[in-house]
Image 1 (tube, one colour):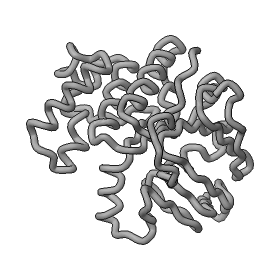
Image 2 (image 1 turned 120 degrees about the horizontal axis):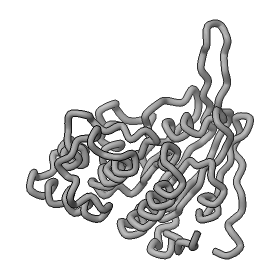
Image 3 (image 1 turned 90 degrees about the vertical axis):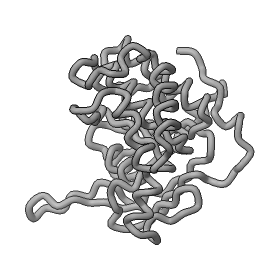
Length: 244
């Protein structure tokens, strides 16, 4: 795979866009307490592409959910664009998720009764953006992801790769500064997965979005500015690639 220029080339602000301090998370299975994350701290600067690695069940998805405000830590806190998510109301947290974060799930999570254009438009509609502006932006994004002729198709009428393209467009519609992707190519064959990765990297660079991606693929991690690795509930960081 070709190297992607560092997203940071377009940014001058060195303040972290995303910060986590001493995150801990456990779950209870019956009477058993299962500790997933232990004392995890990290900072991600604007414009970075960060790869998050770890074995299945290591806690990658759990960490991403905490960082995105989809779940709450047992201890510690998350700060997004200078705002501590534990110090705001649920309504304000919803606004942060809607406007500051675009989340791309492995299983797409598209609404089955909505067509591609409607699915992409949902975050902008929640943000109460003007209807004309929302439609124009959604059409533009669907054209950028190669779905110009599939806008009126529902998810059941789209392939897995096409559904993930819709999900990418949906994540970008509000121009969020942070894109979080949870193994976005995990349900796709290698050829389609490679195309989706290239598309995601290109669009995030164009939109000047910071990208945090969970992945099992070392080739993807090698493209990143930094690689974080979860094992035994702890987070380790790999150095920058020598070629960057």
